[in-house]
Amino acid sequence: MFGGDSYRYLSLEDAAERLSMHSGTYVPGLLQTRGYIEAIVAFGQKHESTGHREHFVKTRLKRQAILTRRNPLALDAIFLESALRAVVGGPEVTRAQLRHMVACSRQPNIRVRVIPFSAGAPSVDATLFTIIDFPGADHRSVLSQARATGDDLQDNPAEVRRVRRMFTDAASHAVCEKATVRRIEEIEKELT
Image (tube, rainbow, N blue to C red):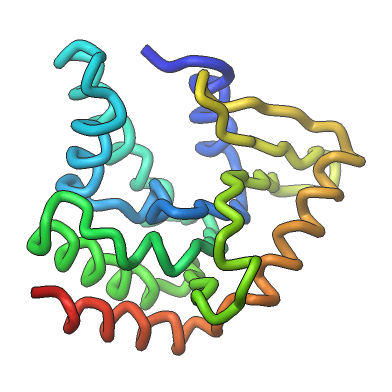
């Protein structure tokens, strides 16, 4: 049902202490509403079986429990302003998605920041990646990069460091969390 290292990614995500994620032009998967997921799947997986699409939606929703479990995962998510402005699934689905992101941003373990259009070149870098950090000093971090065939995982320390620098650089162009929430709320009001 899932390609590449996607199944392995799910188990690593479950064991993780922290995710640092650049989701590009998408709302981060762990923060997506059912309606948003269904709209993305209806477009991106329209040639897949109904069973495959339903499994994808259920799996994505189930994964979100790591943000609210007893020892919740810390999520540091950055994304492009275009992720907020895309009217995915229509205005009602998009409004619900934006409201959900604001609610999620109030959780102490979730940090969301947007890279605004005004940032210039960084506002169009849609590279998708996640750095997975685990508890304890003995565990190596893992890098997940999205590919058309599924997630590609690696734990090469030099590559993880390189992408961590990319994350830090991209995050330096993002607005703060409060400004992100204001931007989300402004975009929601603009929807007709």
